[in-house]
Amino acid sequence: MSRDEEQTGPLYAVPAAMVAAVAARRAVGDWRGACAAAGMDVAVDLPAIARRHGIEVAAAVQADVRHLLPDLVRWHLPRRGSGGWAPLEPRLAVPLAVYRGEGSTVALRVRTPEWTDRPQRLLLDVAPVTYDHRLEISLRERWDHTRFRWDARETSGLLRHLGGDRTPFFHRDGRPLSPDEVPREPPEKADPVALAEWVTVAQDRGDDLDAWLVAGVDADFTVPERLRTVAGHPVLTLQRAAALATLLPLLRAELDRQGEPYRALLCPTEPGWGRDVLELSVGVGPVRARFYEPAPGSCFLVPLGWWRRSADVELLRFGHTRPAALHPSVRAALFPDEPAEERGAAYAPLPGPDAGAPVAVRCTGEWHQVRWEPGGLATPSHGAEDLRRHRALEALGGAVAGCFAVARAWRAYNGQLPEAMVRLKAHLAAAAEHGDVDEVERLLDAGVDPVGVRGQDLRTLLHHVGRLGRATLVPRLVGAGIDVDSEDSLDRTPLLTALSDGAPAAVVHALLDAGADATSVDGRGVAALHLVRTRDAADFVPRLVAAGAGVEIVDDEGLTPLLSVLDVDTPVEAIRALLDAGADPTELTRWSRKSIEEIVAGYRRGDLGFLIEAYRARR
Image 1 (cartoon, one colour):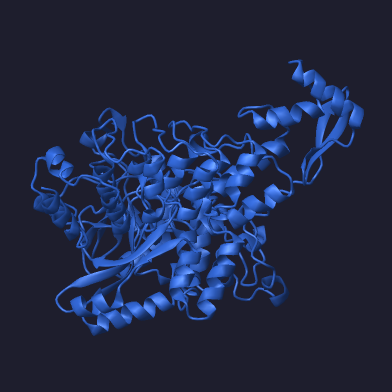
Image 2 (cartoon, rainbow, N blue to C red):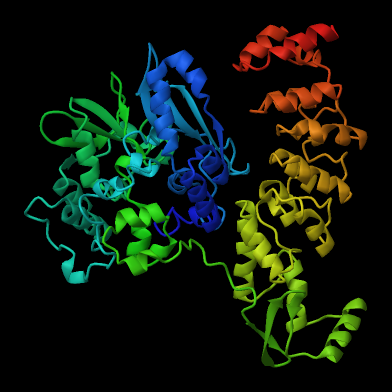
């Protein structure tokens, strides 16, 4: 991922409305409400923590969650891919703080979704620390040493993390350094920010080994013979190893803080034997960097936050973003002396396209303009007679061109459109995918046609009503012309996607009111009741069953709805709703060939005891 693509996700994922809502809830001491506003579910039971781990641990957790900035957590979390979608890296459990209790060590964690196509909701919980310091992938993201990423009391620590008392390549007030102010030679005096600037520039111009050496790392990138290929693929080359986008001075300083000799692994990609892995030997004398070779003893996997460049600083440095587009806490930390009049500018991560801005279109040999207005696409260069002639020609199947072709191209998935309208369509799809309902409604109110807007997996805006969470959008989108049973690339209808996304009951009812087919199945035979995920499932499951949704229908893997929902982190209320609707719990043992007690124990949840009771009652 390039430096100008890495941080595009937060532009959609942390909208201004979310930041404002989080701030409002925190101002009145409602930390749970702040988490809800940031799309973060909470599974933190303070009384239970006190009973299991002691009052001191519970008090420390309580203090930390009260100062949690959930929108800032979302801003800093790593993302996969680039562009407008850029979903969260899945299946991460990021420790925010670690506590040593009565005979146990636990962590306050943030967990990301299991899959990239799931709603981008987070989960905050407290769980035992189970680090494997040899090659535990979750340690690639460890924030208990970088509290500025989430703790309102520590946000100013970002500046110290980057090297010192100012942001590299910038003055404290936010003004970029002039070319003459950037060091051209290694700084002679102990100036960590100047050192960071020189090393960064050296890497950028290709003086890679010098950069490592000046930063205090004795680097030798000779590839051992037996590591030159792994499964037929070349391992990390000298150039790739040396040019890692690293904050080398930061890496060296963090390693020195460990205080005892050890081996560390630097993994720019997935860890593995001899693939994109460097071993850092830390002890008396210089830090030594070598290609990783299997060695006895444990290794410490260096967290990414200790060595990866700041995407925010890189975007600012190369002019790909502006201070107003940074999260307010990040902006305040990076530029502590920014003038008050500039600091007062509203947080605007993504200036949404002006749907009413005129767009030039080549028509009848001339340049005309079209624009969206409340009510639809306006073609001011054409009068009522032109419009009637166009509609008649289109009804007869004739070809249309120019201004009138734009509306047809907009509704086609791959229609040829002016670049401004291509960007507008992509923007609307990305806003919907990230659940930014305010931006979606802003564009719809401006007259933008929702038909033809498709994002990941060819999903329409109606497929995203579950994550948008606003039932009033359903009749509006259906009325605009989106088929309530349209299918995406997985053959899922909006109803199936909404259920999978954990849509609130009001959205499910709205889809059924609009005529959604409750009996539809996707390309893998998955039906509506296989996808029940919400705590208010009892409110709509009976209606789905009455509309024909099968309680015992099996998908292509032979799973019934009850078996399917147990295979994911489904709320207990949804499981109870299926049992109340007539799901047969004895199918659990027939399918898995284990006892009901073994099945329940295998899920390692303390809230499934009622399944054993239901099973025995049915037997």
